[in-house]
Image (cartoon, rainbow over all chains, first blue to last red; front, side):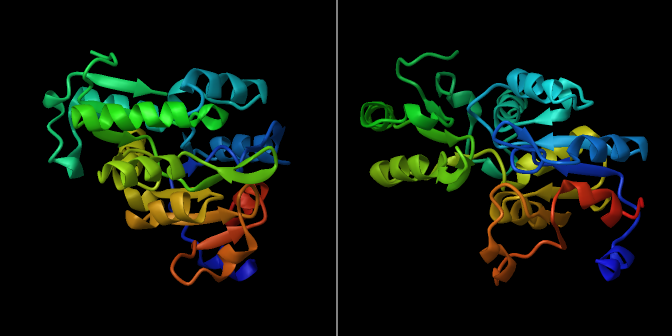
Length: 111
Length: 155
């Protein structure tokens, strides 16, 4: 572990944190996660919570994290539903250029 | 406009225990009848539920792709665009960002695809076999998130 610490670069400014399995498991917080996140924020790190969860809305994920007393704003959470929304709004499926979103005015949402 | 009459694209999210033959069959028929595009919020194989590794959305997306002979457009991790959009919102450069996750493919693999530094935690869906994965390894592996300040040089 000591060697690793020495080798790790020191110029990071932001962290992408997965939520489930990293901060909590099931309904239980992983030990030390709140203290860790507070410490990271105090050290100036920007944190984005990057989840693949699609079973609940960003609002509900946010409320769950708030209940755990995690210091965050709803906009700090990034999920596939949010990304889809951005894609659909900006019509920027960069690597999906074959997808002319204009042609897909009718979309069936199965969420 | 979002409705279920002649959709031109179908967005698939996870239904967990609500997935059943009738729903999948209805989606299958809707895709075929309308030649609809399949957009999947992600295609993760499994996740941890009720303390056991369990089927995630991916197997159901794969089933629909197989049945319709179509390939879906993917949104969530490990897609490059997903990571790029998140970093864009943070107003940071890729080399300034570290990804911390438990999933060797979605979190670590996805982040490595856009050259982010990666740390895997040995919690959640981490498995012992991840440590010997020949194709994918994180830059660092820590027991849990609580070792993060140390590895980032804060202690």
